Image 1 (spheres, rainbow, N blue to C red):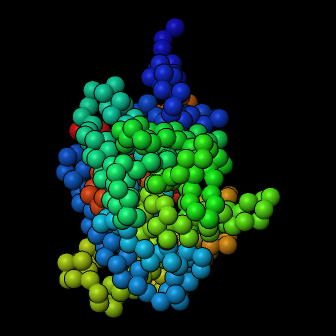
Image 2 (cartoon, one colour):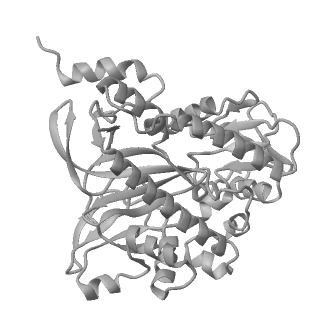
Image 3 (cartoon, rainbow, N blue to C red):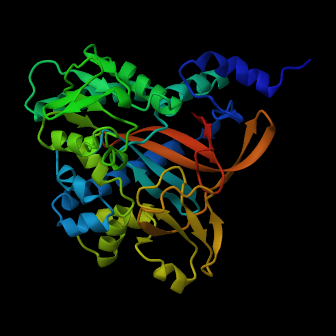
Length: 412
């Protein structure tokens, strides 16, 4: 009996399942397939991501000193305002990811995931294994080493910012019951190469008025919370005592009792409303250099707090929450203002919305265990300390959601 695609998939991904979420409950997540890019296109993707990152970083420097009314307009909780004003290390974000759409006018940025981007292990590690299987060049080769160096430097810089001397004790944390979060965090811990570091689940961290501790009551100098969003953290409350432990942790960070990565500046860029600020300044022709205005025009999509501009001009647009994730609570409207797509999950209705020009994701064909399938795809490019890094593709519906596939990339 001939070997099926599923047989080949199991042979490849089976040995990886102990520390990689290769499939969902109803089928594969990671594809045994490859999307080939030319060297020129790889360069174009990284150039776009890096320039977009520079625009966000420059905007961050202005927003950090903005009045509280601006933070409110950007949909930040008031408990985070002091945290938002902190500048602890050089880069605005250590690990961020720019999500790009390939259009007839070149690559356009949907958004930047600056604070807690996932898709890390797929792009920095698994992608290379798939490229080797297919006998093609891995465009992400060597990026894991660069990430390792950047992580160690950022950890030490954060520790020194707090006045630390010697070797810091670093704890990597996540929801231990969420496979993607746990395995991503384990990968980063391993990649860091740190000896004086450990993993501690979120629910086993301890906090008091003096600091943050691991499950063995050892005081933590640096907390690496790659998958733990600040907008969730600030809501954390001890159900038994009523103590607002999330807010207490933010106070400890502000008071330099513990350092955190990604740094506070990464959270400031996380609100999608920052894109409204960027586009507004661009339309006014202020703040940015002439070259930066050209970048914004070339790579960014018009984004506003209201849909009026799109309705008046008969343009399709997308409505999404400032702090939404994985396509949740996203709506697409046609030129007549009527909805043409509404996500089935609506978990972010409390987050203020922004309205962005709709650029449809391109279409490609993938190989799955159930045969060939036509899908839309989004191109993500990581920035490590602001420098363009690993590339990866999510493939699925017209809006990328948590059921989308991981489609590895190779160089032609």
